[in-house]
Each structure stands twice: as structure tokens, then as C-alpha cells.
Length: 217
Image 1 (tube, rainbow, N blue to C red):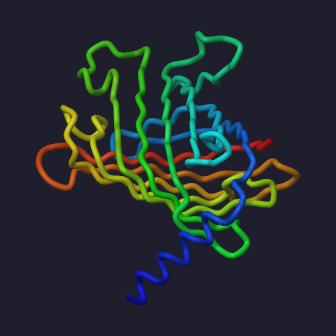
Image 2 (image 1 turned 45 degrees about the vertical axis):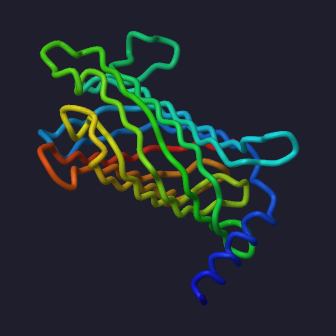
């Protein structure tokens, strides 16, 4: 009974607070896949975090991100020249706040995430490596800065992810984390981690570490 009362209190607090404003974050840096032979590639990200409205009420938040990948030879991503793009990843999360701190800066989110990735250098790769897809349930704990931008985030996911399995199968668990280490006038250093692994059956583990300079608006 006590646990139910706590959950009710958290839900009531979350629903009673105003939704944070729409934010846009642009990142540029380097990423490394550490679960395979070392592959370090430059990348550029655009992340949009916005409330989803139904009439006058919010029904959740949409967090959409697009990651542009450069080449392993270190070719930088130029947003004005598509020839510098070696791959694209898109991820879309629909989340609803189910708990928050008294000041609204820390919050617990529940929802799902779906996305896909594609690569230009796909010759000789298996179908799941050329065009991996994923759709996962998600529980996230995150903190927002004074502008409402998420500066620390930890998400646990479970579902299907063909980066880890040859065919789509709902048996992959994952962890996504990011943290802004410093922030000077809206510009900061962000460290990220993305890990996935099948909980049973055949498949492979996948882990990627990224570091980037971020600008938020």
C-alpha cells in the first residue's frame, strides 16, 4: 500500500507540473564502437525534445534525434555536403512523464523508442548490418538544466534490435546513457554510451562510446 501511495504521489506531481519548452541540441564529435574491431568515426547529431499536444492537454513528449556519421578515415561530416555522410541513424522516442522531483528538473519517463540506420559502405554486409532497425520499450531517468535541456540521462530498454540479432526478435536488452560534463554559455562536452545485448539465444553484444561538443537552443 505504501508503494502504491508513493507512485500516486509521483504521478500527481508529474501531471501537475508544466511541460518543459521545446529544445534543440546540436552535437559534433567522435564515436567508437568498442564491441568490435576499433572503429572511430566522426558524427554530428541533431536532437529535438518537444511536448505532444492533444487539444489543450499534453499526452507526452517526443524526443527525435538524427545522427550523421562520417568515414572511418576521419572524414569530417559537412552538413552542406551529403558526400561526407557515410551513414545516418534516426531514433524517435515517445515518452510520458510518470514521476518528477519537486522542482521538475529531474523526471522519470516511460514509453517506447523506434528507429533505423543505414550505411553507404554496405557492400558485403548482411541485411541487418546494412539497414538495422529497432523498437523497444523504455524507462528513462533524466535531469534538465535551467533551459529545460536534458543534460543527464539514463535509459533502460528492452525489445527488438537487429544491431544485435540477425532477425528482428524481442529479446534484446539495452542501456543508453549521456551526461554533459561541462556547460559554458550553452556549449558543453557530452559523453554518451549505447549498449545492447540479447538476453537469450544467438546474437551479439553491441557497445558504442561517444564524445562530442554540444550546443543547445
